[in-house]
Image (cartoon, rainbow over all chains, first blue to last red; front, side):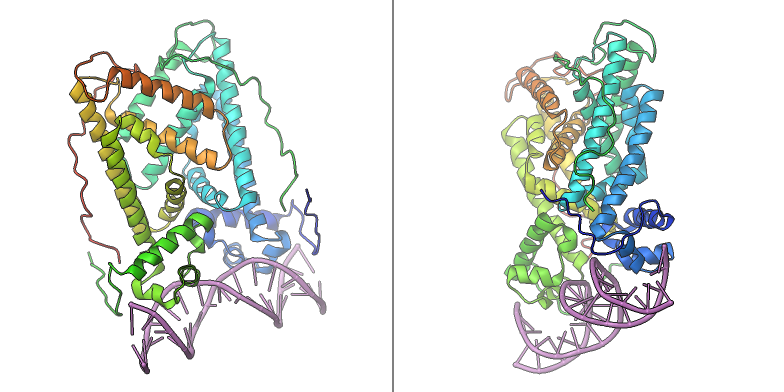
Length: 234
Length: 234
DNA sequence: GTCTATAGCCCGATAGAC
DNA sequence: GTCTATCGGGCTATAGAC
């Protein structure tokens, strides 16, 4: 396993304001016109810089994309952790799907990830971290109240995320067929859970979501780990 | 409203074998390398043709993409209708998410749709047709048996599609966290439904999925309509 | 840290001959 | 229906001066 540490050229520091401006411009360009619109020239012109600066800070355009994914992922993860702490976990998971910018970005990243290894690895890492954090928060809440949803915390999280994603992505395309019914159902389910498992009291035993029978394994406590393994792809 | 009927140049017929070969090559290229890899030159070289033929059959590259979406959409819709007729509707919906080629294509189309009006319209149209067909099949089956899922058919369809999409797309990225639990839950739910609402008998009254209370509105019978409205974007 | 200059390639789209 | 030729542009990435 090679570490890819060729240093052929000087490269700018990771803390540079110019570098940040380039990442900002890239994120905006991706949202507005899609990732293929991100070229050194367009990026520079949007940021009011010379095109060659892009390659001073990023060896390749893929390195730039990786930086954009990381900053977006870190930001979303941060928001998620805050939301999980300040409201009912499942509702936080449901609401997290409501950020238009994040949704647009994640569709772009998904398409990128399908064909670019380095980006796939980043996307995977963030998706897994988010899921772990969500499942851990839900597990903790259920344990505090001795409650049981009738499904594992992971199942509840996966289904909630899946529904939130589909509904939000579709509505961005102007699709709304079946959305009302589904939103109403999820709202009812969340309210039922919240009335059975209130934010900070104890003991309730009846399943809040009688979805079936399940062996509710717990994901256990989770720390949000800072990047591990091969430190970077750049 | 203009019909965009400029005919500045001769354009090839829609039934040409060469045209089909170009659509084939485009679809393959999109799957393998993503939609930005589709250029007239690369397309032609993959199909063993001259690049200028692309513009003989398609005025712009966007017209080509629209054609690819339409062919893929028609094909998926056709498969779906067959599957809905030959097995339990919800299971057919669940299984329909299992085609890797279709999944890859739809991520690409989604990214394209985010930034290109003509493609967004096509994607929307197919998504709505599929949902209508699915909900109609489920409604019909429930009526035949006088059964009730506890949620509207649209809700059941939306949730099933959402879960299938998320699980399949994630597994394409190598993500599997929480998948086992969720798949097992869905399998149990489908089996429960199928035992309460068998493929072709009558009368069962107990809700198969006790998911909550619902006013099960029916989508009514649905025909798969051939393209309506502005006939084409080309 | 930012600049000029440049190599070498790919792009969409059209015109008009055959 | 397919070809040759071509316009006018954009692209990544590097080298080396300031």
